[in-house]
Length: 142
Ligand SMILES: [Ca+2]
Ligand SMILES: [Ca+2]
Image 1 (cartoon, protein in one colour):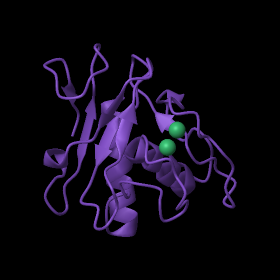
Image 2 (tube, helix red, strand yellow; image 1 turned 180 degrees about the horizontal axis):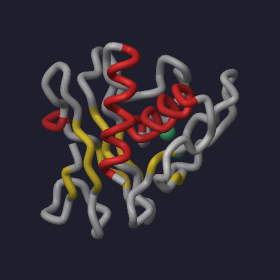
Image 3 (spheres, protein in one colour; image 1 turned 60 degrees about the horizontal axis):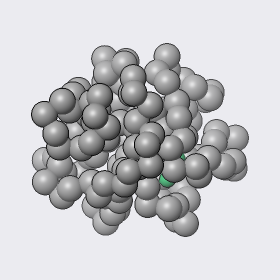
């Protein structure tokens, strides 16, 4: 899953001259601030490929905010890992907030500022089997 996401992010970067954004707030300013990175990754790649479910990576909606958009691609869907938890995706975000993550069990964790990468780089990780961010079983995918 990580390799497919990395490859799609590279395609986006080559086509658009920058990384997919860390949040969908530019398209949906009233978002609930939860799962922003993974939702933006899904929405960005789906729009680039002009279809729903653009990659063979599981999709979820742990914060229950999937909704339609003018582009025809749903907002609020997330790429999820093997345990059903949203991936953590962060790129240098300008004024965008980092927000928080809601795992499949309903636990909410703020995305820590220390995860924000240097300009031109991004962070992609799975919270691992325990569904918690920042523990030893996290899988770093970037
Ligand atoms: Ca959300
Ligand atoms: Ca969602």
